[in-house]
Image 1 (cartoon, one colour):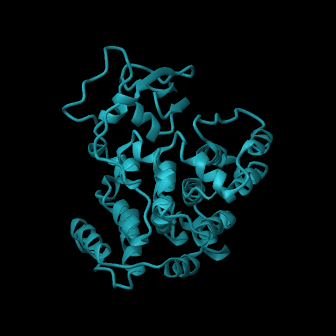
Image 2 (cartoon, helix red, strand yellow; image 1 turned 120 degrees about the horizontal axis):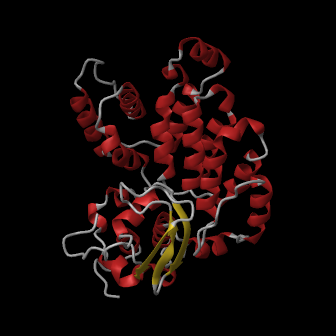
Image 3 (cartoon, helix red, strand yellow; image 1 turned 90 degrees about the vertical axis):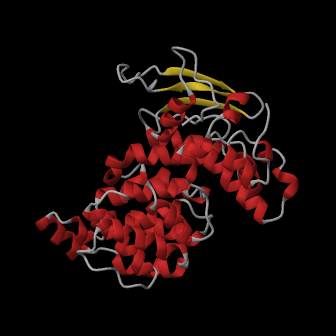
Length: 340
């Protein structure tokens, strides 16, 4: 949310809070980013409860100065970063409001955290607030390697007998759906072929997985931003078994493929559309990094900033040091405050 020093939008004009809500909910219809002047486009909702979602979209435009003044530290979406340490990524997810509420799926996911840390989970009757706090404390000092996570994912992979038992009982726990928190954490880790392999293995096992687990895996494959996954995602659009997931697949492709302008999704002939669109994309790692460094998606710019900073490529970071989104700018080594 905007901080106290940020003036609100003029009456009838979409504000930045509403824009970022649309962004988070994947309700942007068009979106162009100019690093020197600002944002423009259309979105589904204007944030007013009395205003219905619009197929034509509500227009928005924000000057660079408005974007620089936004209170990024008070919007929980910007707490999510890109992490080298899997335990750190899990800690951020466990601390999110969604995990603060007691439910059986949340308990199962917290138990998975303890298993990843080679710790015995607390007793089942432990108060959820205590369980949640213990998990956060354990993650603060814990270390989880990708190899350990991959081994646990492999052990928990459901098979034919598990799925038959699930069909007979409706118990999602039989399919180890708690792996979803690990899939989400993978999405916020620095790019690694091991992670892509683990996410893809869940998608390949779709016949024995809960539909939400597969959906989470497809989302994570896009957000992990490994452009090598584009071909496999496009291929899924030709398979009848993934008909339910077409929207999620297109959202993942949109994230992966968007540069300075949001790539629209297709209303029909999705496979043909994306097969043709991918021919326009960069064809080497250096070109991809430059492309992502100007993307409408701040998470992609953040990932590039982290990678270039780690590689000591300071000369390539100059523009990202001036980024309008605070977490991106700080990751690149830029200042806390900038003027337009």
